[in-house]
Length: 539
Picture 1 (cartoon, one colour):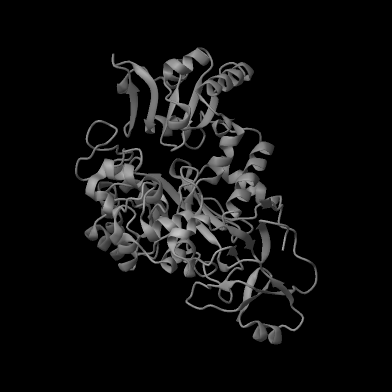
Picture 2 (cartoon, helix red, strand yellow; picture 1 turned 90 degrees about the horizontal axis):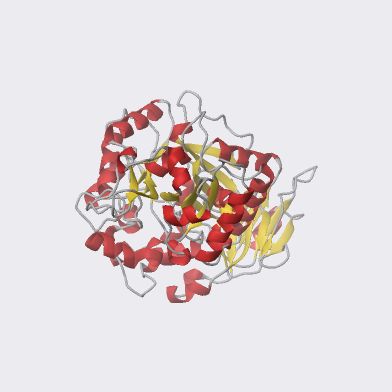
């Protein structure tokens, strides 16, 4: 993999025209031009090579290596800044086994100033074994330790951490949160949903328990993450949870000329004042605030989302957790709607989706198009209401391929309508593509394969009625995601006036059966007509 550095400044003098040709081109509007002409980062012409040569006789020509050229992929809901900040803490991706995890934490605890939190992530119990308060107390009984689960929905702390958080009994859990317990009823160190979210994201003027590393390390880690996304053909993404820390990280990268991706941000509601939202960035096509994020229920794959009918939830109650009450949700959404700000609400279960739609249906009419993040479990009636309110759906892309068997175990027949891309599109709902990275791989080709086949890792088909065709899946991950952030007029298709963002694949997915797509790779990725990734030297 060749990861390229900062985007160089445009040359002085008249902007040059560049003609790209070589692979089959899918422009995203139903056309297949032989070539594209670009200038100043935008597409100025499409057609045959001869037509563009005649129109631009002094253009530079670039013959691209690859089989298929498509609009740059756009991940509408992911967490690259959280992936980057994790690398500035105790990075558990670099830890191989439970013994190494404990030794790594022990070493960091010895180095940390007394009383400061030791923060480690992402914890995957399937790879690194289970954790609880007692195991972390073996690392340190005096230094507070928090180990964040890869889902970001829960964490584990030691006894020193419980004392600092003033969690003594299960009754100390905030509304919308849960504190895990031992068989004798005492706390085991597990913090679920708001029991963890509130200390992590406490709001303006308060200090999070999960502090990142130095600004220099943050920027270096962000550059690493974005380079990895470019290697998957991603040119744009919406970071679905930012605070002022992450906003500054992106702004600093932009100012330094290091922000090679186009970034939308969803600001966590506890940091958002409807009267004083962040001003536009100096380069809105490179960095912009898309809206305000809030969370209504728990995790789909964690078995904590809110459903209308009982299921095999991990809470032991037959249902998941209500992170915000309907009253809290209505107040928050109403305030931001009246201020003209888009809201993006995490709602997985059908009860949560229904609650959100009731709030949206009660709002004064306007042009704002709010978003349902994940929109996981729906039925035909809920889809009708989503369409009627012009609400945007942002379902998981790769989750059937990755977690389909587990979802059937949790939700039974309802799994057939999880990530209902086909029914949503048939109802004319704007549907975006998303990975929820780093909770899942940020690989649009994996997600597209999942959308087209609905096949799990064991070969099981879950919800065949929700399969979409290749071009529909491509549209979801390009034009649909651009529409979700209000940018369909500037990107998402390779048409005149749009940004020259595209990816070149080594396989023509439109001419290859899906069972052969697993080996497909990205050859190069281009942002504004400049190469930001190549599997060899810069073309």
